Image (tube, rainbow, N blue to C red):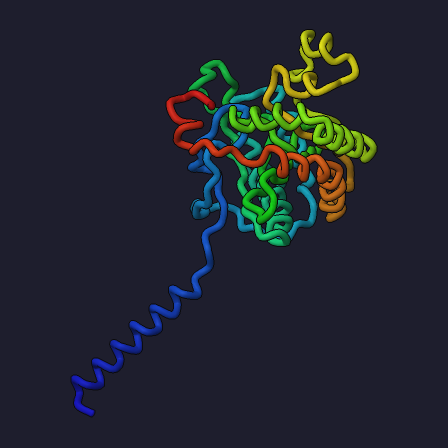
Length: 289
């Protein structure tokens, strides 16, 4: 082989190795720093992004850190930058990393994706909002055969987990109203809510749905009481701060809480489903649709 032929062969081997390395590169993971979010209403446009530099690596879930709840107590007393910066390591290692690990394990078992939300409040629509949220929360979504997802939140009150829809779009509200107007569908919804209550879960957004008009129209919590005046239909459980939340036991508690909402999630998936309004239409221009 000539000298030029040997050089060409080496170059071909390098290109082949480079192509092989690119095929085996890991997929990007979820990060919340570039998210677009409507204040207080969860994900605006769920998407996968690459981790930011310096982000804490996701490890197996072993419980929340020993000072996890101190952060939220401190922010509720003094919500400003100095407080958060003083607890930044606590946020990264005791709160964010364990919550990401918990959701990642759940998503991996079901073929879904994870999204954790940023700690800062958006002041675009609420200029007087405090700079930092007093919760840290995330979701498991894009699970095949499920349009509802799994929600988890840490705060000074402990670990809260829920299933359901928090901020339905107008097409979802229309489908919900149509479904509860059908007697058999409404009866199955009532059974799902009763099952959740028996398992220790309570409805979220109940006050928004139960207006004086609804109570007068449906004194026994009929269809109108479920759909008038709000866009939320979800159930969840709160587990107060305890030693168990700082151990692997917290994953079992989260599973119990989510399981309480499974019947409701199945009903919502079958009768309401995801919004068919494109994200750029639903969330564009500063108005939710």
